Image (cartoon, rainbow over all chains, first blue to last red):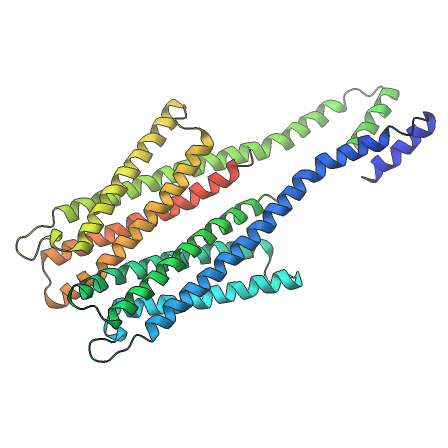
Length: 194
Length: 194
């Protein structure tokens, strides 16, 4: 780069046409800068989108966890009598911890500008973590559906309603994390070419 | 960089050493060709891998479909009495049709060299199709697990064994399609930069 800046002055000393270089340099810079700023803007948008999706996933899995954990109404109406509900509770807890950790890490990175992990490792952790937790969430939510359906055929009370609410929150958390996994996968694949 | 390569030829014109540029150009070509062939080899490997994974997914979902569809042993031992098993059967059928269609399309494209869809659309269809069918497979397999568990606590017969086998095949098909979705996602993201 230092060479290209050294040479022109030598030429211009020989031919005194000094007003031509200025617009030429400006359009050249425009051509180079436009895709980069576009890319920055896209990456910034993706970062915000992924943070928002993680926030949503955190909210929904926390709700699923709280609703299911408080779903104890005595006798047969205790969530811990059914393995499906215990599974959903465990996965909701895991997903809450995971999304809270990820959201904290990303907020910390955005505010301080420091990376806690190497950039490539961070993208890998994001993608595989999101994808695995999304699979676990969809698995636990769908395993709890048939039992709740069958119970609601017989009785429709606060226990079955709370279970249905927790299952819906599980599905919503799954959708947020599945979209977040899409974004992380996109980031992972573009980072391997930088 | 171009300036530093411009300078030497001026020197060589002054001094008539004409045999030096030829090897320089050849090594230059080597530098350019090596990453491209490496990339071709990697893409070829990915294509074979994705075809193999689709073949496996086809095999496993066909098995899940056949085992579940033939799981009728009279009285309460009929799969169509339980919504979980009907769901698993439906998704296994869908997954069989989808993977068979995809495998046929990819074999046809590999053998004739013609693309049936535009390259970018094809990558999109691959990725979203794989991902969605993988989510459906994990959802249906996990929804059928608790019922089978509960039945096997009471009775252990050919009906519960066949159900367990169909569920395992569903999970195996899910794993194949999840890996295939990974490869399709990688292909999709690299294609957007060509």
